[in-house]
Image (cartoon, rainbow, N blue to C red; front, side):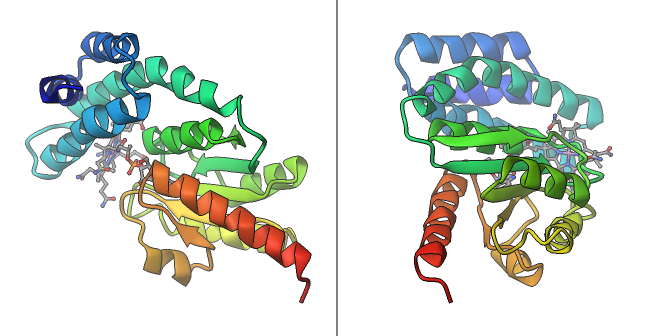
Length: 224
Ligand code: HCB
């Protein structure tokens, strides 16, 4: 895909222009461009630029909301294209996904869910502002293999620890792996709260989920 198209995608997010973002996404699909390529090299860099400008006081909350709307418009076109791939694959595992309590950021989580689905995982998305107990209840109900917890705020990332604790309290920790992510989250933080892994982006989340499934299969094959 030409660089100008990626630049236009990025700009449509900065401008908070849903119609343009949607048109560009449709153009990408029509031209046979990998949807993931359009997302990671076109639209997501726009979200990062918005975050930087907001952090520097050059953009304000309504601008950030308009940008999120534009991102959603692009995803509405590209999501189904990516998910189609998942239906052709064997079931890779069951994942319960959500954004932690007090946090309403959802774009990254949705992207993680889409990519996991595209790679054969059955994903149940609990949405945003989700308490630890709710993760545990759904994980039990679905016999989940993995719980994925997103947090975008330094004030809400501590609630990821609450999810690990809720799983322990429910007696589910031995069979449910926990992966965490979100802009302020680090590998070190994941270790500190007792999660099984950290992923920096959606593709890494797929790789991590696969490796957590391997660990699960190995622990069943070789009981301690
Ligand atoms: Co928001 N916001 N925001 N925001 N926001 C951030 C996160 C700041 C960093 C912006 C800044 O200051 N530079 C900042 C947080 C600062 C901090 O905590 N230190 C911030 C703030 C302050 C706020 C409010 C408090 C603003 C206010 O009200 N004054 C408020 C909080 C509301 C709340 O949650 N209670 C707020 C609100 C909003 C919206 C509503 C306007 C909007 C969200 C809309 C929505 O999601 N529907 C928004 C947005 C869009 C952002 C930025 C600009 C982009 C986030 C995003 O979508 N990124 C963000 C800036 C930034 O993150 N740099 C800013 C793109 C996605 C693709 O990346 O990192 O979310 P991602 O996800 C990746 C990755 O982390 C990983 O894979 C994903 C895909 O590649 N991953 C996982 C994520 N979750 C995972 C889970 C796993 O298990 C594994 C991997």
